[in-house]
Amino acid sequence: MTDSPRLRPAAVPATRAVRAAVVAVVTSWLPLVLLSVVAWAGSAGATAGWDAAVAVGSLAWVAGHGASVRQAGVVLSLTPLLLTGLAVASAAVAARTLSGPVEDDRSPRLGWLGGMRSGVARLTGVFVGSYAVLGLLVALHASSLPVRPSWPSTALGVVVVPLLGVVIGLRHAWARPTAAPGWHDQVVGLVPGPVRRALGEGLRGVGLLLLAGLVPVVLGLVTHLGRVRDLTSSLDAGALGNVLLAVVQLGWLPDAAAWGLSWLAGPGFSLGLGSAYTWSQAQSGLLPMVPALGSLPDNGALPWWARLAGLLPMVVGAVVAHRAIGRLATLSTLGAKALAAATAWLVMVLGSLVVMLLSSGSLGSRALVSVGPHAWWATLALAGELAVGALLAMLLTWRRYHR
Image (tube, rainbow, N blue to C red; front, side):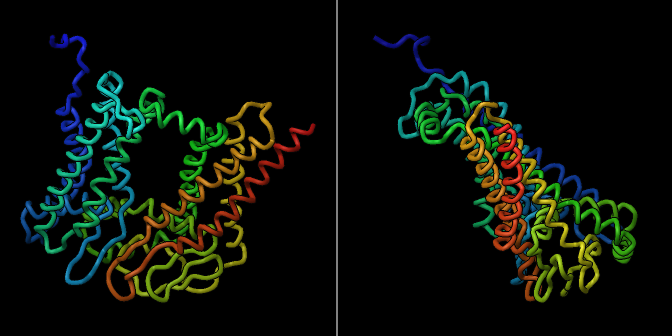
């Protein structure tokens, strides 16, 4: 006797996952290619053809996936995190189109995956695998240029980005107990409720810290706008070229926010050998010809009130801890509220460390081989500042609790 078709597990449409991966790659790749082609078309002195302009767009896409690029022993590995965010967002939106098949799937469950259905595992695997294959093809296209991407870092990036996209795009499906009952039961049993409720606030706190890191960046840009304008004019790129140059520099805006956050924390950042930007001083070394770097402060000692910048992370720590505590019931114990505040604090510390590490890299050789925040020292300082803010929030909670 054969099973009735109605009783068979619903087949997962793998082709739908392939289409979603294609959409994710194209929607993040095409804007970069168009930008590159427009720059090529508007350049009167361009000697390369339009195919080289398309390859430059492909190289930018690969760089946004964390790939370092090399030419004649010179390594450029400072990831434009805004392009990384664009790629992850595109992957998340594309993965969200798979939510219907994921929720409707009735294939057998896999014990070694916590009870996840085999069709769902195959669907996500096909999406990630298809994205990775397409990403390697884009990298192969970019390799036609003299500046070529590094294959190990490229391979890692084109796997990590779609994985993040699947996690973010299908987060509501993963949160349901039916997605993977075994894992869900373990999380519920091992992770206390206050911790689970505070995780989201901690992640939002990382975003708030990066917004705080943009404060010194914007202030520096406004203060030294004339110098930035002069550097831009010296490149003689024309009106269209200046606009495109500004757009390209925006690719590193999240990196600048992470550098600003490291400065707010105290240890600051460096732009190569012999340079240091902290609360107390600004000392530049050999700088690349990037107009946005004209917003950096002049060499010398900074005024005493620059140290007040350390208050901003404390304020963020207090706000986020207060919001994490507010996620709990009013009658929750002080211990539960302290656990929620501590969880949000830990997520902010670890998240900030990850972002600062990602915003570090190389802009060339010799003096510019290492640029970016002093990530570990900045994280330690930031942990203390955030802890002060979280303790203030707990103190206010304690006072209300004992009224």
